Every structure is written in C-alpha cells, then in structure tokens.
Image 1 (tube, helix red, strand yellow):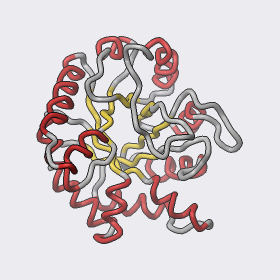
Image 2: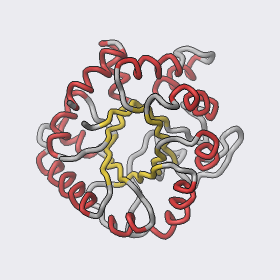
Image 3: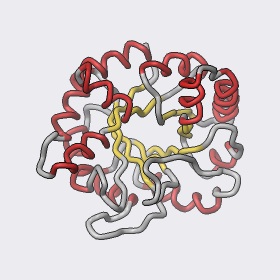
Image 4: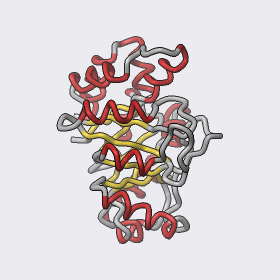
Length: 247
C-alpha cells in the first residue's frame, strides 16, 4: 500500500499567523497518527515562515518508533539565525527520510525539482552526507526528467515527483497527457532501481486517478489540500478518507 505522509506545514502557518502555540503541531501530529497515517512530513525553511527548527525537534521525539519522519528542504540553503541548515537538523533528529528540494525564499511553495542530469555532481556529496546519517534520500524532480541511473549510482534512494502540473490538468478537466508523462517517468525511475514518491497539490479529488496510473507508488506527501479539507471534515476523518483512497 502507498504510504500517506501528512505534511504539517499549514498547521504551523496558522499558528504563526496569530503567535502563541495554537494550533499545536504535536497535537495535530498525534491526531494524524491515531487516524492511521504512515508518516509525517515537515518542510522547514530558513525564513521560518511555518515549521521551525524547534517543531522539527519536538516532532522527532514524538514520532520515533511510531511512523516515518520525512524532512524536506534545500540542502544548499545555509544556516540563518535560529535555522541551522537542513543537514544539521537531520544530524540532530535522524529522520527516516530527507527529501531534497531546490526551493528559495522567493517561492511561496515548491514549484520545480532538481534536474538530475545537470545537478548530479552538486548533489553527490550532499547525498553521501545524508546517507552517512542513516537517512533515506529522496530528491524532488519534475516529471519527464532524465538521469535516474546516475541518481541511483550516487546513492539516491527515491525520487519525489512534483505533481503540480498533473493537479492543474486534472482541475482543468483532462489530465491524460500529464498522466502519461508521469507514468513513463515513474517507470523509468523504477527500472533504474529508484522508488517513486509524489507530492504537491494532490487531493481527495485527484489522488485516486493518479495512484491508478503509477503502479508501485511508494509514498504520497499531502499537506495543503488535506488541511483545507480538514477544516470541513475534521483532521482525523480527512486522514482516514485519504487512506481509503490509497487502499
């Protein structure tokens, strides 16, 4: 079964908009775990606009031995203020998986992946460092990309497909062409020995169609849509609805 990893960033955004501690990210994490999710995802950024380093540490103690812990981020964004850098956070908390994303402060949200043909030499020492910590390494990529054999050779374990273009096409009424691109990309990655994750703008409406097109999909990371839906349906109910789709 495809693992559901719930991204908790939007819980932190809501908390930070008011200050204080509510909604509490640890309480939200427990709710998701109790509902049956297989993992939790956070994406701390240097500007600390949502999940903070302290959140990352708190969740590490809460999740250990219960569900997978996935930390996303740009490995090339240096330490800044209270943000120690992605590698240092991973060294402290030893997550199950680190997902490398080429984001910047100027992006409202992640909107593209690494290019495994041009970025492979830059990624090589970074991947080795995270693997030395015992972390599984996934790299955020665009559908249609190449370089999967080279990625496997430097120790990358998984790719995470950026599903924004699929979600837009689905919303517009015809996702057949995008689905073929995603399916072909996933097949090539799997043939190279990489597992395939996916994430961004996946929702209850479009997830089932996507999963059916990607045999062997290892993991989906869902945050924005899930938290939006939870405003109407309740957090636990929403997590269980996603698990029903994935099963």
